[in-house]
Amino acid sequence: DALLADYQLSERYFSHFVQGAWDVLEPQTDLLWNWHHDLICEYLTATARGEIRRLIINIAPRSTKSLLATVSFPDWIWTKNPATRFLFGSYAETLATKHSLFRRNLIESDWYQRGWGDRFRLSGDLNKKTEFSNNKTGQMKAAGIKGSITGEGGDFIIIDDPHNPKGAESE
Image 1 (cartoon, rainbow, N blue to C red):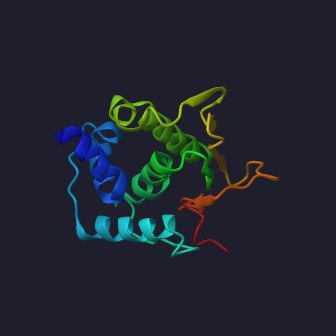
Image 2 (cartoon, rainbow, N blue to C red; image 1 turned 120 degrees about the horizontal axis):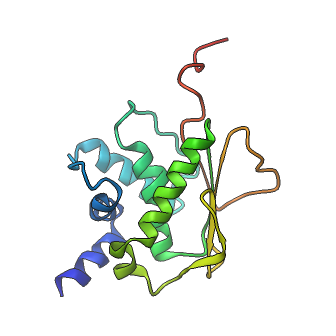
């Protein structure tokens, strides 16, 4: 079955997962795949395997870094290991919330549920915009840099845009 094979490729190869998820994440925008997407996917895959422990991705704005690293990557990890815990931060709570909603919407999408809906389900008792969990003890929690994350942790800690661009170069 071609659909099953496509989901198997998406589970195995992060780049294939991103391309499959794209229509859910950006239904009005064509994905123009480029070499930098392959490179980011390669490094994130190495991170998932534990080959890279600290990764910094510096790339021009509007290059799909957030959709790859902050949105798609955690959801891809949950296709294989739904017990994984993530902690996300951003300079602005609104951006952290936006990315959290993208992650949850992707998980709840028909596309994702057809492929991996039998592996876990989101918990009803912890299903907020900025924090949600699943029935396999996996968790995703997002906060603005000024938000309280004392005592929190994760298997992966992802910081996306830690500085407000308007103040990044100020003293």
